[in-house]
Length: 406
Image 1 (tube, one colour):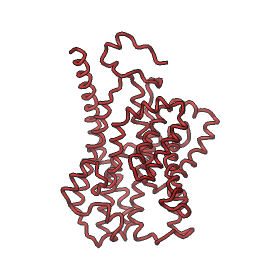
Image 2 (cartoon, one colour; image 1 turned 180 degrees about the vertical axis):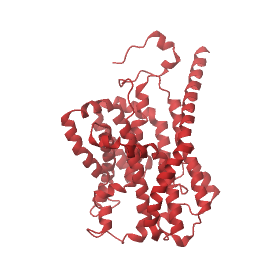
Image 3 (tube, one colour; image 1 turned 90 degrees about the vertical axis):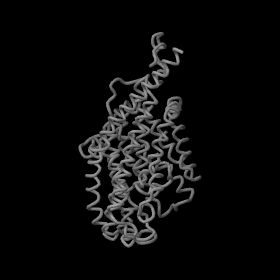
């Protein structure tokens, strides 16, 4: 039962929000392993785009022959290294966990402050990345003969300057974002931030029935895939992360037991294979079939399993807390934002038939650019986001105070 609220707390403006249903842990440490997991996922997205650039000129048509190079890349666990969309699913689960945790630590948590913080931390770096992409577009000529016609790079990445498309891109709400193709995910991150209070209430109320609730969320995701409804496809993934967050204290306590460690050692590889099950079974289960839609559900379940293993007391957690994953985690958002315009520009310059050279140059250059973008753009904006959070919280507090006095 929550602690009884005193008369003084009732009078105080900070008591507007009820005491959280989930018990608070004092001085809860930041879960650094989740930062490392985010960094690894961001790097996988970079490799995924290198693979997309390589496919038109190096992948034979049809199903890859068994034991061929592309068979190893697409039909074995090596696919984990280039599973970009699946890495985004992990991003969404992570957001569902880490964005919720601060709300579980304080009874006077400010939801307006959270929204202001998220808008600044997501929108402003994204706008700066669009400026970066536009500069590269103007500086590096997009000669059509440099890339294979009709390919992903030719169709999905902007090749000429357009004010209308540029303004549409700044909204982050259009279906396609050609100046910086990866920005489509931010639409769902922003929408999740607005829906978070409702997600959290549902997750807290149903936390004891986490298994059927999680299965229902997975089912909604599959239904969204079948129906082509993106909101139903992606928002349940955020909710699964929220469900993990409200049960995190139990998970941490459970993971310390010897039996749990043995189970987690099996859960991690199984979850990783679930993430890429549509590729492993691609030669048998064809795209658009009922089986393929079911594999989408396994993809989300695999993402949850990987995040749970990262947050538990496992060797995987210790690996993610090492220097390289932590560095990638620190610059992960910046790396995610700037890598694609850079890779695309290098490919347009060298030609997609030179994709090995483009990859060898582009990947380390993308990491370097991500670090520079983090230092110059993202990190200073963290201070702006904190100021926006405090300012919004104070504005709402003053409004509540004046309304009571009226």
